[in-house]
Amino acid sequence: MEPLSRNELRTLRGLTSRPVRRRRGLFLLEGIRAIRTALEGGADIRLVVIGDDQGDQPAFRGALELAEQQGVAVRLAEQSVVEELTATMTPSGIVASVAWEPLRAPRPEEIPGMLENTRASRLLCLDAVADPGNVGSLIRSADAFGLDAILLGTGSVESTNPKVVRSSVGSLLNLSFVAEEVALLPALRLLSEHGWTIYRAEVREGKEHRALLPTGKWVLLLGNEGHGVSEELSKLGEAIHIAMTGAAESLNVAVAGGILLHGLTTVAGPHV
Image 1 (cartoon, rainbow, N blue to C red):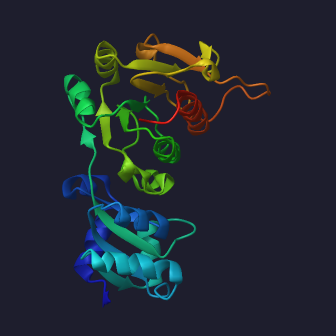
Image 2 (cartoon, helix red, strand yellow):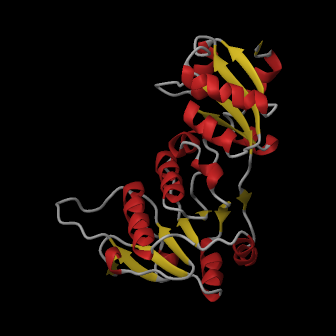
Image 3 (cartoon, helix red, strand yellow):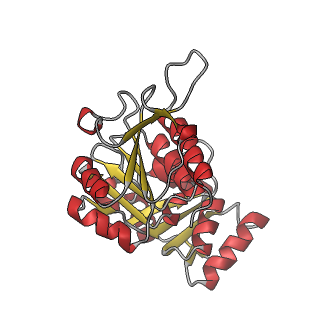
């Protein structure tokens, strides 16, 4: 296992910057579970870096062997370097660069056809959800409950933000279609015209989500952490809510999204 070179370190450090991620088409993925899953799923991993005191751990050995079998370069670095790249309170000791990009600012009229090409039938749509931890958790929930695609509307945090990637634990790579900087109003209107049912999450309005029996193609639309779905989107689709019996006025958007996705997918039956 060769040591990490200065040029490789410079490239990895650059990926903590949004403009560099966009220019290179790469992002950083950390954690042994996320990296192993990405390797098993055939992700385009360009480089794996492991801390110099981690290589003998059994959990790491299998992933490193898999990387080498796939021809992925594996480098050794001081633990402090790996911690610098991960920038987390509990660094895992392993980080990788992955070649992957979402579709950015697509034309709304292109979206229905693109989703049809990927055979998507369950879509999560986020309206100006800005907190990276929330977006990452929602991506993970979307993956867990068998959704195909995510649209991140204008004002939402980018999908390859390091905190988003960390919170999603690699689930970003399991979705068939991810688009960001989406003009949601025209996109959702067009999806509705193409037979998609839109469920708009509200705090109190509309049907209780457990009363729904979704069929066909559907969208779950979630709004901003502070004020919910924007006014321009507030008349779209069918309003749904989660019945709450306690004193809290509302739920965190990631928690609410997880509950709604569980209800919509388990009531609807297995994804086919």
